[in-house]
Length: 113
Length: 115
Image (cartoon, each protein chain N blue to C red):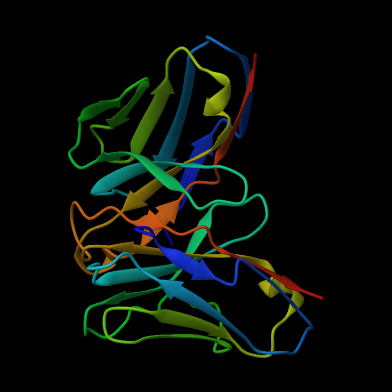
């Protein structure tokens, strides 16, 4: 089946630093999504990308849909303590597979004040 | 509330018992999804429902797992003869419908512990 490789697995940074994480896939996706999950809660959608090459921002977050459609990255600028959490990428194929999201293993982000 | 609601939030049961998990999607959302998240892992797709179409069950790990949905509202995920490896958080999501540009919105999950 489809596999997503997400890296890094964890990051420990100082408040104010920028963060970058990425996902790569062995197969093509039509949609890339980035979610954040905090303890005891479900994932919350941060950014959705629908077109190869697309670069989208949401406040301090920026994400890009890779040209090959097999990768995506998420950047967080000027990190703050409330950015702490687990960030997941997810890919969505087309056709009959539209209902299925394939998730990466997550990047655990710790921000030191 | 306006979001996806799941109950119970926590469930502890003995190995071999059956469990039922409930999901109330966002009102008006015709598509509903179930995922499993093991400790420290990403989410694994289990099943999704789109309107009155036959559900896509391709992610269910064994025949002990089943799910039903009443019309376009509540869904229940049933696990029969639970095993310890079934311990996980079970997450439900919904979207207006299945397809392009229909991001999935998640509930807070049911944390299932099998003793």
